[in-house]
Image (cartoon, rainbow, N blue to C red):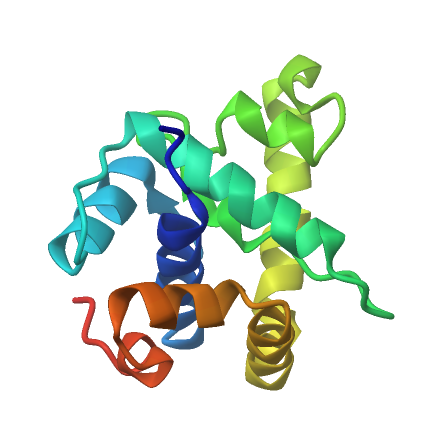
Length: 157
């Protein structure tokens, strides 16, 4: 049976939005994200290696939302601990990224990170409403019998 990655994608989204709004930092390692999400998960554990899958689902979901303004790919804040850059899987959203020089990758990452910083709470709340209207949140709430507000008010740290 194929695993449904929308659940950990939503958990990653909630954590990353909370992380950005707290202004803790504007990058987090794959390992730390997997640890933080797994700590609070109802079903199953994640690890740094398989975080690329829910982050890809999250990126595609955000890219497919029809908004007048571009929603930043908040998943790009998840970085390799050694390079402090997103992995080459982000190439799915930043075409050509895997072939960029290190300096160009840093520039692209810095620009997206600055956009994420400036996106603001009101816009992230609007994205949550859109995800809810597209049933991503309803699916999560229904299958886990957990109110969505619980995830947005959760202490991750």
